[in-house]
Length: 330
Image (tube, rainbow, N blue to C red):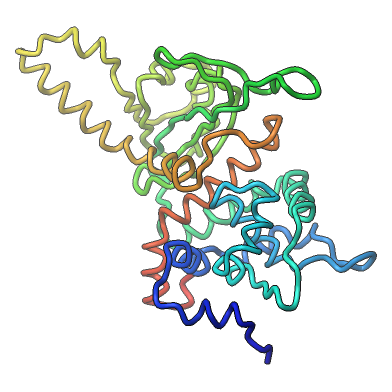
């Protein structure tokens, strides 16, 4: 047996459980670690030559800490040294070993990007959710959100990121990219993620966000005319697209038809509201409000992983309930 260090003993004896501890304990239970490690294992270094690599399980946990708390490579390394709950989650005892440094995490992240592993982990997470009956797929809600990017030209090239673009929303200008998602209309869990520059119209990604099994598609007024686009002519679904506000206002508020129209729009909006939950998790809980890397491919890899992890956060109560009923269920 390993002797417990003084810091670990002091941490174990405290009387209050912090929110971070509670969250990490929940994620330890609901993340399908075996399935995700199986995705990475075929390309992960075995250590047959050179210095033995850090264990895959540990590196995956460090990578997820980075995504959950919006940390840079250096900040993750600091967090492991500073925060006992993070060390306990990753499985590091500083009395015996050092934390993985920022360069090691950089190489791990590049391994995921080069081999498109974040997309495959996203699919593995959704496969688990589908198996548990949490991803129904009978209807799809489509929507998009802008992810800001640094607009400064104070860099080596003296230019902005060429993959990003500026766009105007309302009276406000933004520079960055868009994350487009297709979410399950029943659960609000994300089943498809694509990205574009910020100036791309939401409607152009509609076809890419449909999985082909849905019977109904819900969207806001920005998707008006989606059913008439050439790439969607063969798609037979019930399109529930919000009417433009100007169209609704043309109907006299005193006429009975206006009350019916308002009720219909309210019903459609109540279903579309579920698509805002993944955006809330990614932008507010995971603090991902600005593109961290340069170029669309690197940012896309991160965005896809963030929405996969957001699905686990949104479904954690159901997953933990299933696990309580049957420990082998998760």
